[in-house]
Figure (cartoon, rainbow, N blue to C red):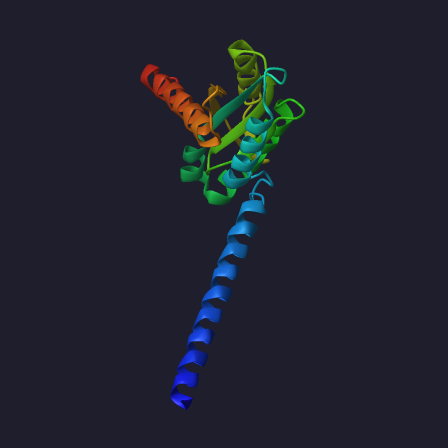
Length: 195
């Protein structure tokens, strides 16, 4: 009888420990989803997905299209190779600031990888409207980045655009914008005009 009670107690302890571990993992994942990018202070991919899903749910005929712009810092890796990670990170932070300044009020800028940012643009009227925003954002990088007073480094911004449709999801919009951005980068590299 005592052996059965001891085994039952051990089972309860094991189950309790498993529940506590699962709760801790969930809390950690939740913190990661809500904590902004430590370098730039911008939302990370998971926060962007949440905002995209909310924007898609709220979109309709009267609210316009939802634009997603995938922006890659072409040439930032070369800076890191020559000057090191700290200088490249300072350049990435400066680039994030330029993006935030270049977008419209209500647009959301997120950092989804070391050199890729995504801009969520609600209320887009058509493809020309989205391309206009993309050109304005890219022009914010006409001047070199200055991560340190003694360093000036020119980067180009490759911007791919995707517009929402009936079957759009947050992930499909990001994937389409990334595809468009990758195509632009390949075209530049093929013509010898990469940064």
